[in-house]
Image 1 (tube, rainbow, N blue to C red):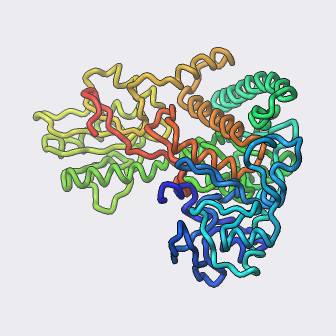
Image 2: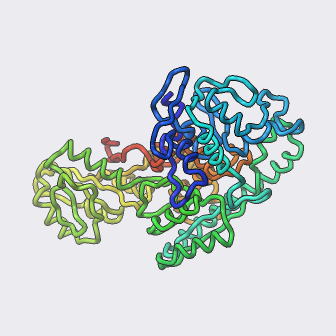
Length: 508
């Protein structure tokens, strides 16, 4: 049972949105009435006093899903209130899912007794709720708000997506990001033309496969240097031409402003690139929760090394890591002699020294030497701006390096199949000197959207797409540079610890 309900354990909080039926929403999302009292249920012939919201199986979108060999049908009134199929020309007419449309009366009956609109008993895992007729009518009003029609950014012929770029970024970075995405969209549209032709002649069982095909349009929303203007610029761009999804926002920093916009518009924003990302939220999927990764790593070292753990601050001074420290400051440009002087006080002892820096600054750390044999180990936490190839290149070119790089790249020293695909695409799109780490993440994001839309069978609900992505990320291997990605509610970031990469191999 626990596995079956894994999708939507947490209620979705619609910021600033007032439901047309607060009582119905409370029953659907939480299994309680407005006073917080549990709606009593019978589940699998056993009485339960645990709140069982409809969302646990039928999800926030109301589209339902499948788990452990069981199918949970859609419960949006868009589906429940219609005959299934609607008439003898509908697809799947000859299959066994025929049923009359539900009415307010038959909905109340199935919720309270388990008898459906075909006068048949439903699966015993469908709870029987102790609802009054008034409560079931209020639930019906809430079901009418689920997937009333397709969301903004799509029509019968066109799917509109956007990417966001920060004008403060180097021109080459912006140019290759846009060029790569436009190339992917062009390739996608080239394939779509053939699928749209097949759609007209497809057999009934193949119809759903082609329902999602649209010509894609890519909009580029460029943000000005003044972050105070971002909200206005984004709102105007969306008002001028709404999009269905935002793919790979590329920012120097300040993603919180964009995240707020995406949440406000209920707009999925998938895998941004920024130096100040948080853990993400329902609408904002991010690749890393860097702060948590570093904090977990430091806590691990505290347990292993206790008072033998040191760090280099931003000015090059060396101090002990305190029990309350959660992060290491970024090492600024300092002289070799100044850092060596601080290092001399500790280097002959069995210490572990932490530093956060970019590759070019790491060379100074690697040149630190003691007159006496040194027992200290130096661990460099890679700065967010560090490209994984710069790290692996440093290890390759410095065979005698004493540094251990600390990174969340799971494939730093391994062959990466997605990278092979990126290398082929950058040649096809004529991209010079690519930042291939970023492009690999863009390819992953783009492919994820493409696959999710295909599975939606033409039901263009953003909530539904998010739920499909949740399932895809948790159920399939992922070929980014990272060990794994989670799409669990309120955990939209890379899972798995950061690791140490040394010349002797991984230490953790």
